[in-house]
Length: 70
Image (cartoon, rainbow, N blue to C red):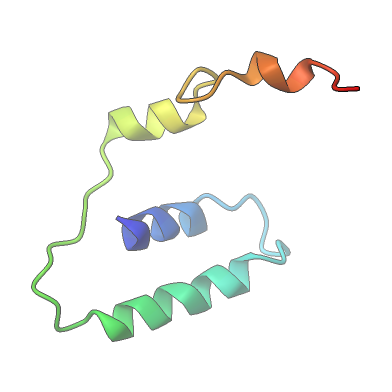
């Protein structure tokens, strides 16, 4: 599941200047090399998961981030 997620992240970088893009490309290359003969079928990210990842309510209550801790 990690490899398809990383590839999706790389496709959606807004700019080429992002400092993490090169590191993610390297990580993808390493994973592809390490698992090229693997019997596992790569996970396919579906449209619902893409929409959920962009949604504010997907898996986390963001309202708790606004509370101050003393």
